[in-house]
Length: 191
Figure 1 (tube, rainbow, N blue to C red):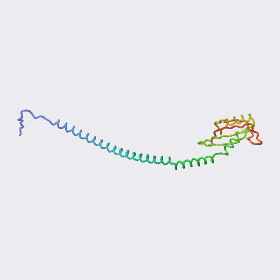
Figure 2 (tube, one colour):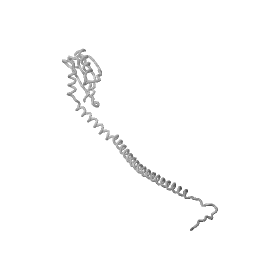
Figure 3 (cartoon, helix red, strand yellow):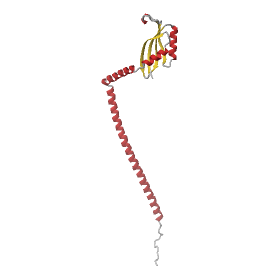
Figure 4 (cartoon, rainbow, N blue to C red):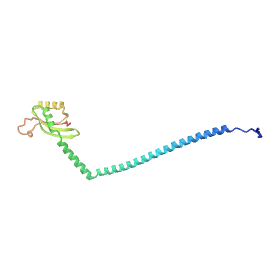
């Protein structure tokens, strides 16, 4: 049989709960440290990729701005201005050729009362509308009033502005029955 004798003057303290507790806390702290380190590394990696993408996009923006500057300088050059002016002139010619003359004459025919005739017509295209300047001759004041009322109520013409009303002179031509000349402008929808 064995007898255990404690010859120490103080009894031996039991430090086992402290050691176990501190080991568990240390293990939990180590796990938390590893998790936080992994999260920080992942965040750093993601930010590194974002920084690389931002850097790439910024370099593309710089290249695009340089190209835009070159194009702006080109389009402000005298040679390009000549080409742009020529294309604007050609587009205006195309627009004039595509003016619906038959439609406007049909609409004018429906609008003109007896005793009124169109002496001159000058359209100017703007977007999908045309500003039409007309010189009209009328036999008398009643025909003039009837024509202006018809133009105001017309669906094809809008924005009637009478520029000038004057008595007809010998310049209207021989055999003309016009006593009044009216200069006016209206908007005509070409669509």
